[in-house]
Image 1 (cartoon, rainbow, N blue to C red):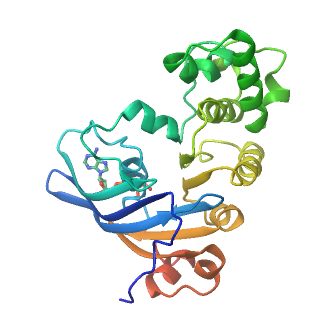
Image 2 (cartoon, rainbow, N blue to C red; image 1 turned 135 degrees about the vertical axis):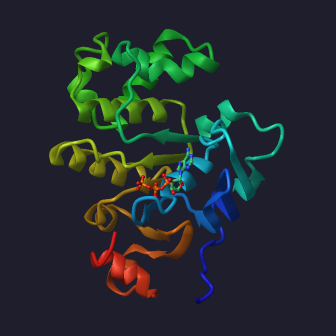
Length: 259
Ligand SMILES: Nc1ncnc2c1ncn2[C@@H]1O[C@H](COP(=O)(O)OP(=O)(O)OP(=O)(O)O)[C@@H](O)[C@H]1O
């Protein structure tokens, strides 16, 4: 196989020779790749190829899985996030995560967005109000919720809940946002709004999204990584991956010949 050029200069987040095992099963087989600010990277590949496992290693979401071991390195701004004294709460503020199912807490819309800030800081009410509004605006959901901030977040539609969850991540001022199939539980209109929002957000953040939706990957991402059986087969500009991939396996996958 050709040597992959998967880490560029200026990557804010990168993994080097990352292996993950669940018991004896090797779920990731030496992943080396990097992510830059101002870009959306899509992770694609058939079910079970390791996309979610990889995404979760980037902010240590897998840490508590019994029997999981990890070797290699993930560095954020040139520092190993698996170092012994790493502050995981701080890490997850810097590298936030959005899940497939919207997961608002069972309290008000306002409190959902303020939650992370209240956890770690004592912020005056006016400033908190401003951050909540700014975050909801950035997540394209302010107009929908501005008149009912004290209502339960659970009363919103799935798409609105997902955007509130994204606002919750934005409120703590992250640098990287990991998204694990964030639109797969949503209708096409809600998915479209999230895609629009991600394109706006990418100017300021590094976005990494796992998606099964090829059209979505080609619509919104700058780079695409194709995973297969725990290996990174190809990682390149999205337009190259979808028009002229270097690897036959990538071509077979994006043409729908398997997976
Ligand atoms: N908690 C776990 N314990 C044991 N094995 C696991 C665990 N999580 C994932 N695996 C295994 O690791 C491999 C990679 O799974 P992973 O969920 O990362 O793949 P994926 O590409 O995200 O799949 P999907 O697209 O279906 O979500 C699979 O073989 C899966 O069965």
